[in-house]
Image (cartoon, rainbow, N blue to C red; front, side):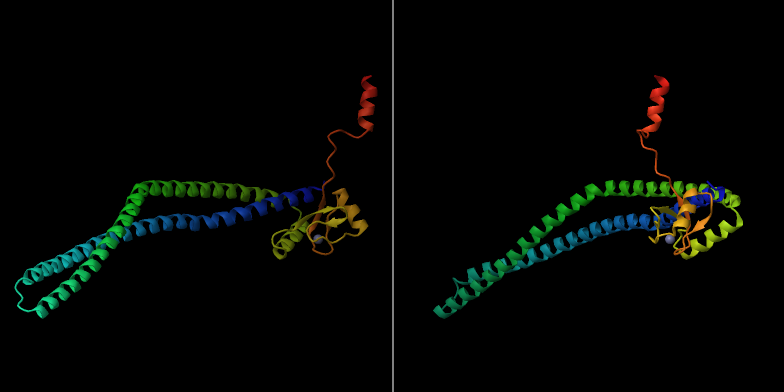
Amino acid sequence: MLPDLKAVIELQQVDLKTGELGERIAAYPAGIEALASALKQFIHAHEERKGRLTANQKERRDLEGEAQVIREKIAKHKDQLYQVKTNEQYKAMLKEIGGEEGNLRSVEDRILEKMIEAEELQNQISDAAARLEGEKTRVESETRELEAHRETDLEEREGLLVERKRLDAALGETVRSIYERVRAGRHGVAVAEARDGFCTVCNVRLRPQAYNEVRTNEILVTCENCSRILYYVPPAAPADAGPEAPAKDTHASA
Ligand SMILES: [Zn+2]
């Protein structure tokens, strides 16, 4: 294979890999930030529920105070029932007591609602409290993992940049300028495999003569359509070599 062609194929691989690494490296801060933000939300929801439980307990105490006041009123009015003089007064007092008992029931219903709400909150708080340390540990370890991956990627990219310099230095001026020009205009891909008479990147058929030249891998040929530098991968030799070779071997060994 033409040394320039071999070098430019390798250079393309190095450049694509460098590009992928660059995207991955750029994405780590967002990943780390997402972990921190999820933990922050978890803690915030936990604190918010604790605040709601405190408020719930105060509301329940207030309602119990209200219920107590109503009960005392009812007891007082029941005592007064024996002191009234007329039937009308008696009826009026009974009606008042009936109204107060209705109020008491509605306050007691609200107390019950508060108790149910408090139980649910308490369960959620206990559950979150039990998970909190585990969540912190998980986020810390996942963050460390991402940071370690980032370090590895940075090192790998450093290595690739050294490799790129080496390949670039070995490249002839013509092929380098074609490579860089096409790479800039074609989303980073400046080299294409030719297969079955086609450029495999833009899918345009090559002229037969151009394809024949590409197949030698000894001449620099570019795709007439997309300008990419073309190379050819000869079909892999079958595992069971063709009929001639083994036949010869059989004869030779026999
Ligand atoms: Zn092409």
